[in-house]
Image (cartoon, rainbow, N blue to C red; front, top):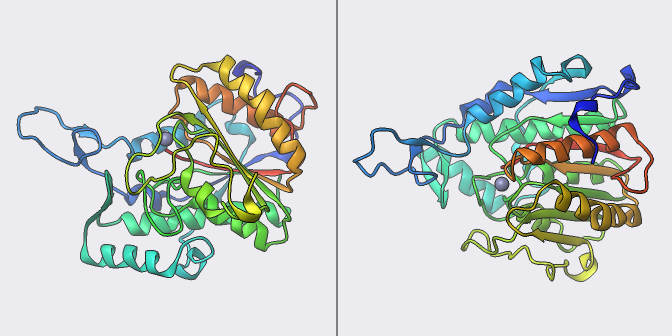
Amino acid sequence: MASAESFPPSSLQADNLIHVFWDEGILKHDTGTGVFDTGMDPGFLDVLEKHPENADRVKNMLSILKRGPISPFISWHHGRPALISELLSFHTQEYVNELIEADRNGWKEICGGTFLNPGSWDAALVAAGTALSAMKHISDGHGKIAYALVRPPGHHAQPTQADGYCFLNNAGLAVQLALDSGCRKVAVLDIDVHYGNGTAEGFYRSDKVLTISLHMNHGSWGPSHPQSGTVDELGEGEGFGYNLNIPLPNGTGDKGYGYAVQHLVVPAIEKFEPDMLVLVVGQDSSAESWKLLIGALRRVIYQEKSSQSLYYEGNPITCNAV
Ligand SMILES: [Zn+2]
């Protein structure tokens, strides 16, 4: 993989700016404190931990984009809340109603560690709408790459249930919008350390979406996450062969990720020939995954032709994840 030091390349032109979509409404999702993600105070700790999915991590991403080395190459855009009707392209009405009712009642732990608190639903709608705006910007031909910096995250959220701090599948909604806007085929590459089970589930029976996930081999973690993330989950029906799970051993570093990308991800994407690439870029595998992202994005955005790197001529958007 390329080193982060060479990013951005000197060949960067004004017409391939990174279009970042941002709305501070996503900060209204307060996940609280406790022991890790339990929200529980055992009563004998001086300092309770912030929930691992908290606003600070996104604030730091925002500051990096605003003041970091790539800031001159970013075009900023406002996000927006999604309409309820827009959610139904990926989620069922019954599930959306469950979330609306939880918000109306003020609070609910939808599933383990996944708290819908006052303000959370508004933030989730803004995250989904902002991802949709980013996709529309690209599908309308206004740029080559967009980045939706959003939370609550989405890649565990399935059509019918929340999971792993995720309520609405921001990337899944963006994928469906791309298909509805005329894209024939969309590839999803998820490098978050956890299996992107929600996105995979949403398109598990479709041959129009190739879902690829690199993740630790954590398996199922309960009723909200029945998928195993193993290599034998390949899709069903017309979607058989269009879900590629790449579980990696704990401790996998740059070389392992690079090998998997070179020998599995790139050939699969090239064979699929998508019109659009959606990257789901949780950075929780390690500090190194950021380098992987930089290297991958660099090739995707600037179309550096190389048989040994991720290379794709389509239009990518990215969504943040946990
Ligand atoms: Zn994760």
